[in-house]
Length: 366
Ligand code: ADP
Ligand code: MG
Image (tube, rainbow, N blue to C red):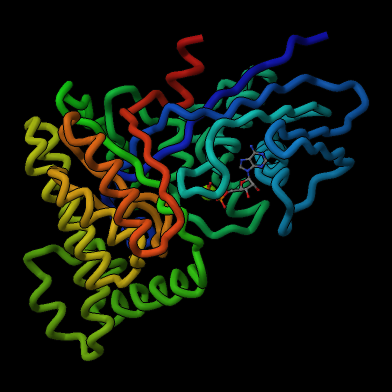
């Protein structure tokens, strides 16, 4: 009997580069310390059993076919994608145990997909490349589950490395490791704003359409092809005011990612912080995807001495990141709790993180 194989892969948080992925642009995530683990044990009867320790549920599947599925589809979809690519994988037990909070914008779905891909790769000795691991994990989400997400989450979960952010070019899918070792006097705080993502799906689709039609009007393949130098001329060709704001966000946000990389490479945390705050203002004023809970968290962080702060993720709630002097963390926690209570918002969550190891680094270290 073959031994069980383990796959481990983390959640992620995007430092800057929001709504740039579907415009062929740039993103800059780091991996988090919370990881998903999947243990794969072969079965002789050809069946597939999937369990989740968090949900206390398990399912047994006789055949795998794509379509909207419950939670287990993110795991089953990876096995399906590997079989689609011609890998002869038989029956298997896949036991899932994840510390990445579900649905909190920290990419619990990619963490479980990537952990499954690593576990199956190890079990069957497939020797998949980093690019292939990411492709099968993304196929589980896009093609098996039918969720139209971009290329960032799975690559962040797999490819990030300790004390680095991952600069991902969403057109070429080429990664670059950028130093992100926080000095001892700074912390990266994560605020869970506890805001429900009301109507977020419709807003997301509207913005994708606005970007696609602006790119068409400007005669470019994607908004990534509009540079900051081209921006004034490009904006003057658009007649719709809302479209002007959407394009301005995407073009300036792509430039901010590259500026953030330059700041990190120079160890210039003050500039990096200012870029975070500028990104937030652009999401609030031009892309119009923030909500009062996230704006309040950002304002409170800045009032407490943060070098920079912004919402991260698709918008309408979710997580705020703030780069703070270590000595300001306690006063930020107090001020944040008080500000939320005063506005009648549910008490926010607060934690800190560093740039942790991605799934490939974790499996190499075993
Ligand atoms: P995010 O990836 O930002 O956390 P998603 O909506 O993309 O949010 O993915 C969350 C979904 O992933 C959950 O609703 C569930 O279906 C699945 N999931 C994630 N972690 C687990 C887990 N530990 N057990 C079962 N399902 C999980
Ligand atoms: Mg997800």
